[in-house]
Length: 297
Image 1 (cartoon, rainbow, N blue to C red):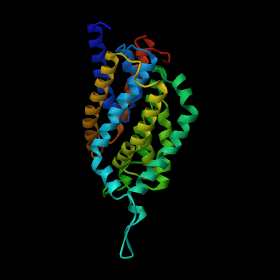
Image 2: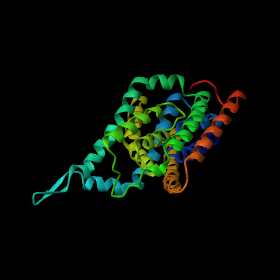
Image 3: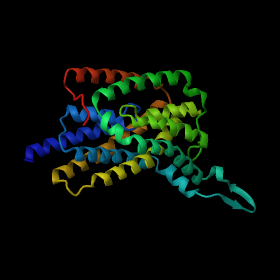
Image 4: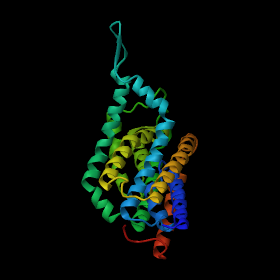
């Protein structure tokens, strides 16, 4: 690549990093937005690089959650095992970090099975603007209906060092997370809706979604990066683009996650549902006009 082309390529990476950082933890589908904006920006490279890029910048956003929730994560590790003093349980299993991480692992199981069974089918047929726009619209309608029939004030806000989620609640949230395999649905939207049905408050559902993202996204991204062959075949511009996207998505996600939690404590989720529907309609129009690609890949 000549200097101008390299600069433009890195600028596009910067913009996509912003898109990823904003959308990864909001219930509006980061994957759907990346598919559309990569097309709009004409972010052109090999399929292998585009896929690698997407997973790397997702890791940047996940790192933001680890940094923001480091105290709660550290608290679970400090209180990992049950503790007994003078024959009395001062820290029973129900109050240990071990229980929290086991519960988190249980919530990961349904999604893991779905990805193993249907991941290739989804990658082949559903990674396109039309299917993303339809799912964005349907997901927005689902959010409105779910919030109406399972309002956030039915569950009390949680207090303590970390979230208390039962095995049953984890399985319900994990089951709903399976919907996020579909591009455009959003892992955040799926798990928050699942949290409502499980009896969690909106903020508790969102925070559990953030924690759930750590093993899910790190594991899935790590596996995909290994399958894609790593970074050995990339040139200097492509490696710089990866670094830019990673760093930008990290810092943007730091800001967005804090603002999102503060927003949820005061406002309903309807605004995100309305945005999904509007964005889905816009993408359908752009697809019909030939501005964005209708086909997968």
